[in-house]
Each structure stands twice: as structure tokens, then as C-alpha cells.
Length: 482
Image 1: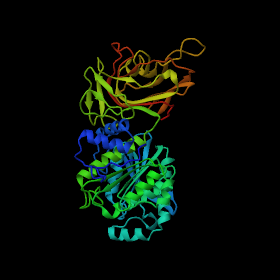
Image 2: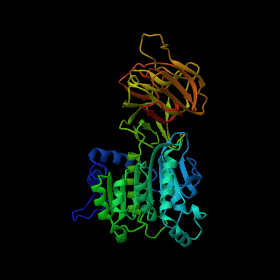
Image 3: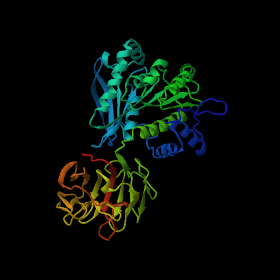
């Protein structure tokens, strides 16, 4: 967000209309995101949204959920936590509830974020007094009795908990609703390590505190919420004066608490658009800069494989089959081992510096490629015995071994395996199921300007095509250990 501008209609009234056509929607997203290029990036993320703000079952098998505690200003704080299953670090998001305490709705919101690849926690602000009671009116009364400054620090501590958690990337966002929207603004003021914040219809912080904000801001308001909106103009002026990276959306026809699907104020159109914008905002602002390409392979149809981290989508060749729900993490692509593969444009050149590549695979046979660079080497493949190996070698000359690195891990047994190759600038390393299974010294690698072949060898030679399922391919521009 470089523009510091608010969307508006012809009367100068800022709003978002859920019925916008594509051109007008792009124009308004450009205003909130800082330009047309960023708008298209956001639009791509919007199109990739799957949760759409719908309910997520408590026992959804794709998620790890439960209650955690972290140390706050007043002692131990209890929070509901949800994250995708698997070892990969995720961006963190703190969810701040309304003035009725930690209700099931906010735990569901945490699960929605988790399904989209975030490690979400929803702290219970009433932890210092025993937690949220069964009566919402009692919860509101107790909340009003809390020390507000100590409560702010309890939520700032939640940001630090996620920022330092080994299961996160270190980037953290915060979003909250009603009382939680005001608290989200306060967290933005008081947490210098917060990367992004999305307050929903929350009271603005004091104008003198706004310059303390370091996070990017996306503020949602309901056009009919006169009480909260009374402070919006002054808040925007303070954000603009302080040079804060911000955007404001006022949702036409929506009132206070329009996002909460458990209340009569719920506005479905506004809530769904706000969810999609919030999700896209966090996906852009909390992006792991190390991750240069990420093929989730969760599509249900079509001949394109989306790159959710970069701008290098893949194209399906042969006749690969999408297997929604049949992957290790949601869906996967099934390849026939004859001529099926996914080809991408250029992503990175191994000769230019350290990098890492990981994928989930099931099936395969000896001598088949998992990831290969067109015109270059196979990054991940199996040898004649079905053992994981890499053909990435150093340039000719010198004393170091220029042979492929072969591990002792046989991965063609019909089970899911997470395989990876890491080069840190001096060593090659192979991983199977997040365990180091091969390593040697390698001071450099032969480069290639080609794109990636997912499930096919460097020259697409017969016998190199993978037969089985491939899921969740990730390419990093740094050495990343599982």
C-alpha cells in the first residue's frame, strides 16, 4: 500500500459494493493495495480463496486445533489455536473477539484462517478472571472490569508468542471485531513487530498514538454504523499524516457487527467480500519472502496449476488428473508415468545461490523424476532402486565429487513421503519425511535458465515421468530445513 487512499463513490462516500464488476473492483483494489500490479496480485489471491468465510468443522482432518497458553502481562493467557497439519511454518494471525468473550464463532474464524494456510490463535481476554462465562451479558460485564492497558499488553504478548513460535514464519497479523476491532487498533499502536492489522468496525486509537503504528492497515466499516464511523475521518487523516500503509473499506448497506454470522446484524454480501479482502491482504502482507513458488495442487479442474507464492503458474501436459481431497494436504495431482507432467516458467537458477525444494509424493518407480529443471538437472528423483537422489552437481573441474547424491531412503513404497533437497552454498542435503538422509560437500552447482518440470525429467525422456500423486510443491530462495 503506497497510495494512502480510500475508495469512494461519486458523492465522496467511501464504500465497497459487493456487486462491483471486475474493472471497478480492480480500480478499488488498486486504491487499497497501492497500484494496479498489486491489485492484480490481490485479485489472484481472491480467486484462490476456498474457505469463503464458511463454517469449518471442529474436527476438520486437515487442521491441528486445540487450546494453548502463553504468558501475558497478567499471567497465563488461554487461546484457541488452529493451523494446517504438517511441519511447514505458517504466518501467524491473532484474532480478537467481540465484547462477549471468546465465543465459538471466533474459534470458527480461526479455523477458517487455518484452512487458508495461517497459524491462528484467538486469545480469551477474560483469561485473567477465569475465562469467558456461559452468559454473554456476564462476559461483557467482566470485560468492562478488566484493566484496559494490561489487556492491550496481553494481546501484544500474543503477537510475540506467534512471532517467536517455531511453527510460524515470524510474520504476524492481527484482526478483531467490535471491541476486538478497537483492540486490534491498539495492538497496532503497541506492537512494533506486528506486520499487518485488519480492524473491523473498531474505535480508532488516539490521533497522537497513530504515528506509532508500524503495521500495514486494512480497516473495515459498515456504512450504517454511525457511532463507530464518527471517528473514521479523523483516523484516516492521522494515518495519512503519519505516512502509514493503509486502506479503508466502508461496506454499503452494512451495519455494526456485519461479519458475525451468529447475529441478526449479519450481512452476508458484506461479510463475504470483507473476508475475501482480508484474506488477500494477509496473504500479500504476511507472505514468506523466502518462498518463491508454491504449487498447492489443490485445483479441481482445468489445465493450470496456480502458484500461490509467486507469478509462475504451471501448465498440465499429457492428461494429469486432479484429485481433490486425495492429497496429503487437501488435493493433489495424479500423473500416469507415461507423458503426464506440469511445466512452469523460470523460477530460479541453482547456480545463483542457496535454495530449497520440497514436495509430497506417493507412488513412483525407480528412475522417475519428481522435480527437474528443463535443460538442466533433476532436483529430486529416484535411482534404479527407488532411493531418493538429486542430480544437481557442481560445475566441471575441481576436486569435489561431481556425481549425483543418492540417499538410503527408498520412497517408492506406495506411502506418502515428504522429500526435499537443500543447498546452502557449501553442502547438498536430501530429506525424506523431514529426516536428513543424505549430505555431502558441494561448493557450487551447475546452473540452468529453464523452468521446472513437476513429474518429468529435464528432457522429458521416456521412463522419467512420475507415476503417482504429487502434492504441495514448495521452492525457496534460501536453505530451509524441515
